[in-house]
Length: 181
Image 1 (cartoon, one colour):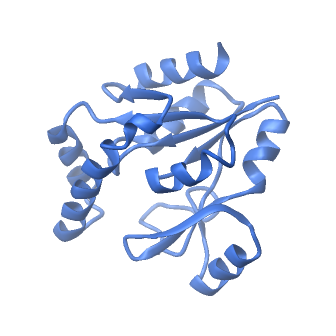
Image 2 (tube, rainbow, N blue to C red):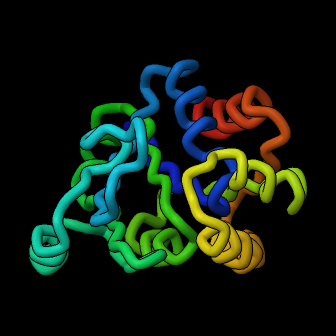
């Protein structure tokens, strides 16, 4: 039997980079692809980065119980699929649910066996540099993300493990200890 890992952290902390490196280090690690109604960013691929769906499709899926949780964030809908994590874990894989704090708190009681990890930035300044460095958001969205980051970091105590993302290699090593040990 595999594992389900709930991985959260503020926007810009490096969740995708960490997941990609972890997947490269352990082929059993599978990122559960979330659903969203937002427009893909440059370079994002449908079915790989997110399942991009129209609002009508999303709401129909939610009504039919296809999601563990769903919510509206930054004017778009996001959701975690219900069946995929269980399938991956039952096949011996490590199913990674990359979800925000609100979603994680909704999923934790539904999947109490899940390992919960909160990824922290080394500092507020580093987080700001990472978000600005992506060059994907206008200043008003960056300001929203930084404010939300403080709210999310304040809830890190709900997670079993907190890991500071100083270097990706250190984070991946710690995740491997937690899931392979």
